Image (cartoon, rainbow, N blue to C red; front, side, top):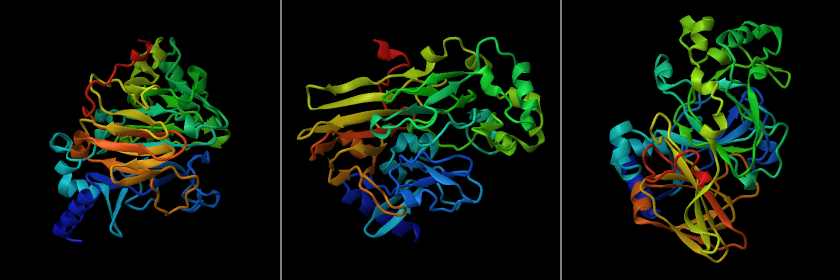
Amino acid sequence: MSTSSLNLWVREALDEGEGLLRLAPNWVPRSFLMPGRRLKLHPNDYYALGTDRGGIDERWFASTTVATNEGAPPDEGLSYVVHAGARHTLREMIEVLGDEIIGSDLMSAYGRWPVYSKFFDNMGPIPHHLHPNNEQAALTGQQGKPESYYYPPQLNNVGNNFPYTFFGLEPGTTKQDVRRCLERWNEGDNGILDLSKAYRLKPGTGWLVPPCILHAPGSLLTYEPQWGSDVFGMWQSMVEGRRVPWELLVKDVPAEHHYDLDYLIEQLDWDSNVDPNFKDNHYLEPITAKGGPDQGFEDRWVVYGTIGGESLFSAKELTVQPGCEAEIRDHGASGLIAVQGRGTIGKLSLETPVMIRFGDLTSDEVFISQPAAQAGVRVVNTGAEPLVMLRYFGPGQAPGVPAVGAYRG
């Protein structure tokens, strides 16, 4: 399709949805993990991409970020907008008409939608790992990745094998302690979790995780607003008896440093990893932004706080009671996913599926453009149970975002 034809199609899609865009489910596998089977995929479809590619354990939302999986097609991780019997990636649409989708402020600063979110769903824990910062990732032509977690109660009826997450390193840990773990990589379990602390995960809460901090996410299904990058390094040599190859430790490290242990250890933000007040500085509980239990709706911050002094992403959870309605009015664009109930959002239907076949279109995901968000979007609950949805924002797009720890009042 020519640029002019795509431009016309994008405008028609925006006009038809009054600034809202219907997104198709966006499934991503990971070859080194085991699916937790809470993504509502049909049981026969968790390996729809082939066992060689791995099980599907992630669903990405409003993503213009490519998943850096070995053997993946070039569009893996990219969200598609569906309109009038055709579909194009959200990335393509923003490239041709970004000011009218995400706003001129984000386009001038980043030239793209610089964030994404996902459901991350595994049967057990994943390796202790970190995400490089911008300076480190730039050495391999990429961007760093801060991220955040929220555990939606609607999708965590079961905690699976290990609903605990290790964060950072115990105070008093030395760099030599970590180096010895790397030296033992091929001897079995390298013991790096012996240097860390696990926190029990609680549905309805979350964490803010800057880059360069070690973490081993547990087995709750996790909603993860994060920066638009897929860089990581695994620091644990075995998980649940499964080998983690050295290549996953150094996949986003310059080739000349693949066996430079001192260089690898310097990737760690040491002070943050051994912070004795780690939980106080990273743990999140919801904060009501608007409405309340007696008003028929409640809009709550579930991801908030700053990284390096900046609000890089944030998220809210809107609950609308049966027979009630609410208005979404935000400064910035957002990616939205419904996790319970049914109703309408603007002119579009909104319904949480019970089971999804791979490749099917659902009615649970929407992108809200900046003009629509600023004008206000009406949400109506037409069902018999609460209508609950999560939406996330880009950098600087949610004025009034609380600080970490604000839930304590």
